[in-house]
Amino acid sequence: DAYESVNTTWMKHEFVSLDSNGNVIGYIKYNIDRDTLNAHSLQIINFSDNIATFGIDTMKCLEDIFVKFQFNKLSYCVVVGNSIEKTYDRLTAKYGGVIVGTKRRHCKQMDGNFYDMKMYEILRDDFINSLSNK
Image (cartoon, rainbow, N blue to C red):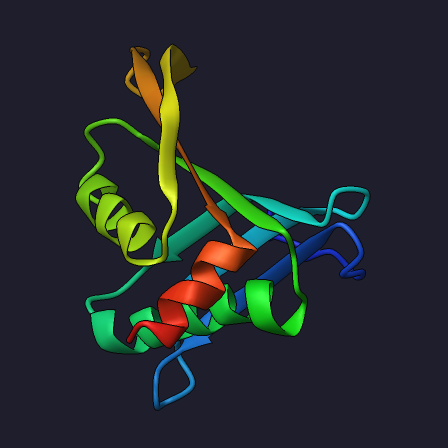
């Protein structure tokens, strides 16, 4: 089955990242809680080796979350042991975020095993302050 994107941005924002030839190289999505102005369930998936372009698009998304849309907080998580975990740790620290904790044996992967899930959050004020400290 083909993926169908949502046709409203009220509860979810989603984007594709394109290379200079217009090829899709990645996907970025997050959900929105309008009552608390929180963005959550961030998904960042790079399909290519084009780390530079995808990184720029990811940073633009983070800036949009806090500057353009002025959401209060961004929450996201990663399966412990995933190769992107160290990058998430660095990104979170760079923008004043914190590791909230770890849910033990929280998710079941395709291999049938359960894995821990590390949770992160960045507050808008901390993100904005990190931009002025550059």
